[in-house]
Image: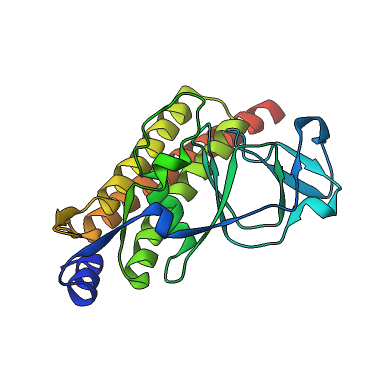
Length: 241
């Protein structure tokens, strides 16, 4: 039995409750919203809006600042979901700033929210639909275990993205795409449960399989990085000679 399966059997033997998203969060209102004309290329405070780019600009206006905390921000028109753990200013309209209620890990909420299938309504608002969708809500210990696994995949993806930015190759592009699909697969795998009445239960494969796959992929990534660095070093030595 895997660690995650053991925790589920021990802490929620009768299943995991499925709770509407709207009951898992409380809304936070920014002191004021900055128009796109107020965005600066540099400044003291980052600006977050509903666009795909994580940080869209900066401001020096402290009166618009939301204090540091763990937030989920949702683009009501775009459906972009972001996790923000620093002080920021809200840009433009259409942004829902959310805080988890008690007994919910913010990172878990981010992954669970990201896993929801929100029907598209074009550029109309989507929060009225999103808040009715259910997310599995296991005990905190299980939430933390799921976050540990999914965050690991996100970190590997971020490392590949940084490397790809520095060295654009077809191999890295393919590997980054595979990592992103892998994260999405395991996010859906860990957050999808079989419903039983008003609760949901699971029959998962072991975490050991996930760990072994992650270890093997990490080893391959390390080998490729070593080979590339060796090639570059060899080339530099040849140039020197």
